[in-house]
Length: 282
Ligand code: NAD
Image (cartoon, rainbow, N blue to C red; front, side, top):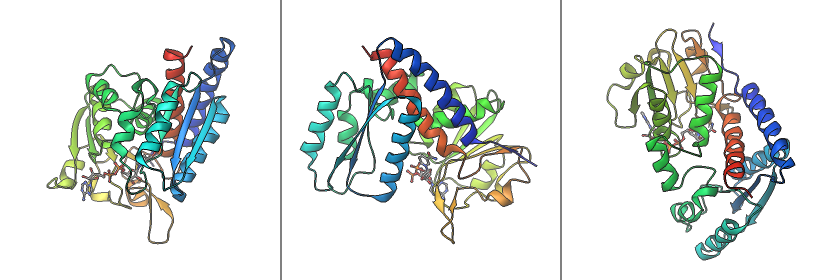
């Protein structure tokens, strides 16, 4: 039976550590502050934002939610970002993506002060990740690294295969594995003979966005499988990119969905906000 990598438990431990550090920082007069901008009324985005607010409360941060109507113009949104950039009590800013039609995700990311860009999406922070001198870790890939590390799994010298090349998950995931001396292969929608490449993986990270995409014939015996996907199956039930029931008996370690990577993403957002407050707070 595979080792179940319990993201819920590991994220709770991480939030506990962040809360302890926050208490010390507060004694020095600095309370980490996170502002979350939500434009429109997309239900999934509302849930994500609610969970982020809840995590802020738990670790002792100040949090502020800015709700804007879907009719908000680009100029109005950029003005909100500018104001938050200038606020001393706000150390982290994030704008929940995707934005409603007509608004430019890229322009908003570029407008956030890189020192407050706790999602690590700004080109300046992406550049730091490439060089390996990052302040802010990209939340989901960093959450995966934390899961791997805290589960006692070695990356160095192992073949790591990442399925997906998005700017949010796949590409930064590959960079973080490379920083830990993994031998990294990035696969994507144009990759030929995907199953054969995946079967070579000691560590397989799936970030595709397709329910049960990774099947039993795509994994090596004893491999570590990390499932980033958040999908709904044919019955509307939450599931990952990995066919868990078929893959679990073969592999050495695996993350479930839900309760794997998901809780780690928010915990890493808290960690980045704490880093911002410690580094730039005054
Ligand atoms: P995306 O759509 O931007 O990227 C998907 C990637 O999958 C692309 O790079 C594409 O090349 C690749 N792909 C698509 N079809 C493929 C195929 N047939 N073979 C090989 N590769 C293929 O998605 P994303 O933003 O990277 O997110 C991926 C998944 O992770 C989604 O389910 C998303 O909901 C989930 N996600 C989860 C978290 C979390 O906190 N757990 C965070 C971000 C994203």
